[in-house]
Amino acid sequence: MAQESTNLPPTANQKSKGFFAKNRVTLILLLVIAVSNASIYLYQNNKISDLRLDFEKNYQSQVAKVDNLVEKRVESATVCLGRALSFACAAELASGNKQRLNLFFIDMVQNTEASLISIVDTMGYVYLSTDKDYENQSILDVVPSLPGRVNEPTLLKVNAKELLYAAPIKYGRRIGTLVLDYKLDNKSRKMLDEISAYPKVE
Image (cartoon, rainbow, N blue to C red; front, top):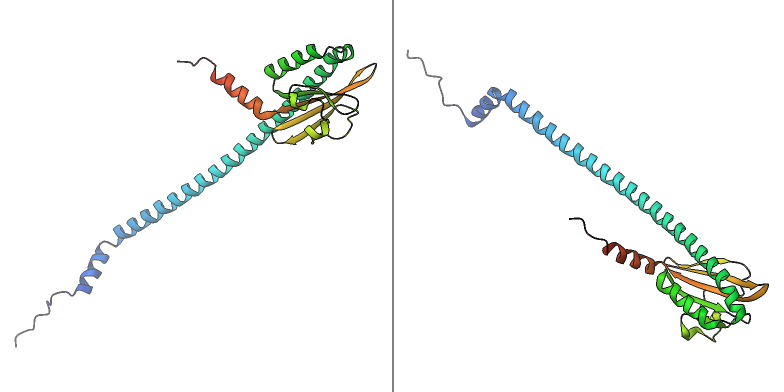
C-alpha cells in the first residue's frame, strides 16, 4: 500500500510563524532599539523644554533686576538734578533775574533728560516755565499729578515712564517751588541715539 505524502504546502499562517520564529531575536532587538530611541527622544525633548523654561525664568528675573536698578538710578539722578536746580536758582529768583533763569532752564532741558522745568510762586501760580503755555496759570491746572503745597523735596512716580520732582526754593525764606518733570522715554531715546552714533568696529 502506497504511503500518502504529508508534504503539504505551508499555509500563510505557518509561513508567518516560521518568519517570526526564525527572526525573533532580530525583531526583539529592533523593537528594543525603537523603544530606546523613542525614550531618548522624549527625554531629550523634556530636558530641552525644562532648560528653555529655566532660561526664560532666569532671563525674566535678570531683566526685572536690571529694570529695577535702572529705575532706582534714574530716581536718584532726578533727585540730584532737582536739588541742584533748586539751590542754583534760589539767588537768581530772589534777585528777579527771570531771563537768566529762563536761559538756564532751557539749557538744562536741552542737555539733560528733564522734559519740563517750572518755578511756582508762593501763591501757586507758574512764574517761569520751559513750557510758556504754563506761565501765569495755577500749577495744579497744568500739572494735576502734583499734590497741593509741597513743603519738602518730593519725588512722585506719575507712571512707568515719568517722574515728577518738586521742592521748595528758599532764600532765607520760602520764595517759590521748583517743579521738574523727568520722562524716562526721553532718556531711552537719547541713550539709543548716543549708542547709534558710536563708531562701528569693522
